[in-house]
Image (cartoon, rainbow, N blue to C red):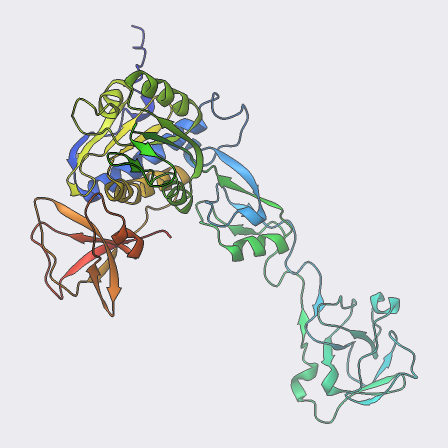
Length: 442
């Protein structure tokens, strides 16, 4: 019997994922992370979105080779080996003289013997002779980082040397250890050629980029970042000036893309659509075809003017239908044919809470990263509970946390003053209670 043809609302990549209704905080975050990982596997196997022969990471996830200045924060797709030893040549760790054997030593490279001499005299500038292998009882001037010749047994620091014409001696003030192979940076001290520098799955830091550079690399293979579209709905939304009564300013186009970037995504199209079901469906299909993740705003409730919910029920497999949280209760998470869809509520704080709580794990799952962590904290004030767990903008006061003011689902002042989202359980909190905070990514 032939396999059934998948419908837009039954994408094969999401068939192994559970469905949740009124999902709690941790269940939602876990499922969002799994959705991101499954989506990455789908993207890596899809020739329509990834070029034929494009590299694949673990689990088939799409990868790309990125120049070192842009790898910070990206996830390494495969083990990386050094292209050369580090250091790739033996060098001096000090200004002074490369010597062979016990002194005194005859100077065979550098300035004329008529150069100033005596205890601690300036080291002559190295010359071409410095590259010649040292014979026993000879010395050449070297500078910090300079190549030391073959046969060098030690580097005598400038301040512990005494030169008379072309003869170099150890100064009386020099410690006995000065000749015990000191001040030589041997080839391969940090790593050998083809040694593994970093393993797949590592979140790369600026220090990693620097180490990769000195190991002879120019690019690193990283997991491709998810491409994220923002589909803004609402005929009442204005983008400039003070809106008339009944109209509202757009609060999403300048905030959501920043959160996307902070969580490892690449902001793509920002598409505005009036409250028209046909226009919405057309725009939705267009952005889904070109992006891995689509974020929509508004229209997730069940009134006659809420068009996003019925569209997602038609076009996607709804994996999370509402959250058991405030604010953000009406949110949905769906799986379209080639993308994941996170439908945000229309109220600004509620929408941004969902981006932070659910969008972060979703994008992390695609990128191969751990979901942004929740941090245990102590509260310093009473915080009333409610029908559902609350996630409210909060900040530190000394060693404890407290909610900000203005934390209604339509308010943004509290979020602008906040350092994180504080979890308030149904039973509420009293001073000294322990709970968790989701730190803000900005």
